Image 1 (cartoon, one colour):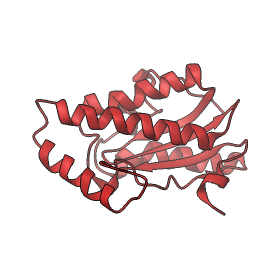
Image 2 (cartoon, rainbow, N blue to C red; image 1 turned 90 degrees about the vertical axis):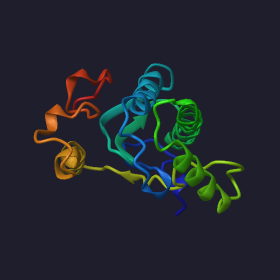
Image 3 (cartoon, rainbow, N blue to C red; image 1 turned 180 degrees about the horizontal axis):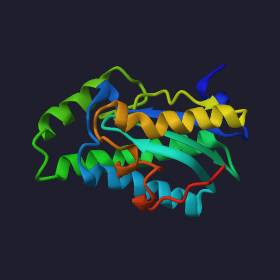
Image 4 (cartoon, helix red, strand yellow; image 1 turned 30 degrees about the horizontal axis):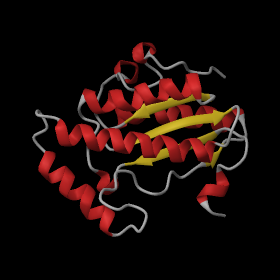
Length: 176
């Protein structure tokens, strides 16, 4: 079954959005803020429910569903919008020491894609996995929340700013 069809019906899905080449983009607050601000917008205007999320240096994990509309449409729109905004910010960020290399890499990955003309930011797949049981939901939430801890970014998962485990992130989480 194609990925588009996997998230093409109502349900709760575990998703992963990965930057091409596993480039560590989300090591700067300004880039993470684009992702979180857009998630908040999508909650308010795109009927998106978020159960858990984490923004890692080169990928995002999220458990979500759409109450009205297809999740696959939201995935397409979210990845497209955030890619454009992030590429624009990378290009204009005076403090980005890796700017030339990052732009080169985003162009390089676009060459292999018919869909992307100049740049490619996100990998094509988002690995949608439907969550059917409370046990599976709890397992995925724990995986998400422990990701920064396993990566050695923090010593306590609750301290990681860009995680649903941290109540100060500004994103409304649906409790199970």
